[in-house]
Length: 315
Image (cartoon, rainbow, N blue to C red; front, side, top):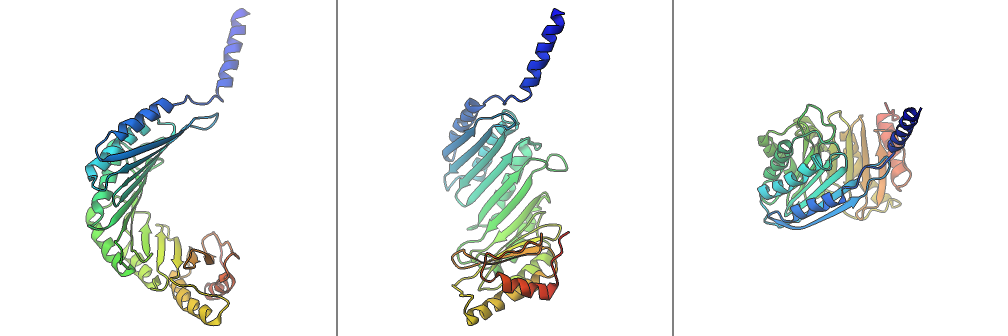
């Protein structure tokens, strides 16, 4: 009976510990920060660590500043050091790395990473070497739940320098084809006028690029996120103030927006029109078919889209 009693106690304690928090890895996180701070090219390293609680893991966010002359090898070395710790010591914690180095920005997220250190290093190096002289590169990667084994998913966005326009984006995308992108990682290009095109699976196909060019208007260049399933998320910002209550201004907005919406066509997309100071003028959602009344140009534009393409029908 005594043995059975002890067994009951052990079972009860084990049941209670199912809800126990994971141990804190704060000292290990600080050790990682110190190691990264000592790497060549690093000017500062800040780490925020959140203690684990019951039913929620610990979280660490590592922000690294590097000199403007940091080499791709030095940026990759920082990535490798951080990811090696993310994939081992902090494997069950939510881990985020953010690096700024001159014209390059790297973001890497990991929780229960599947990719090897080598795969992550190669993904970062590919993005860093893709940007032409004078351009910027934003690399946004994840290693969680990526299909096909030892791979990394995310996006590369190459930004053209000051003075560039949407006409320069298609040639830029064409030049990136030489880098033989992995289709797990999407590519995109952006110009200084606010226009951009990014794709979630390799390089944007030629048909999509041609469609994107038809959408562009100098008065309101479009930034477009395109997905392999055909969905488009579109944002336009006009360059000057328009008073939608003024008939002349409203006609001018019609001449900007309607050609863009015709080019979007009868598919799944969401179109957001912003004023020159970032205020909402209109938001038309043909993706999940939500209507908005926040913008002063919403009702009229929504009515025109419905007449043109029919009622919105979500899947």
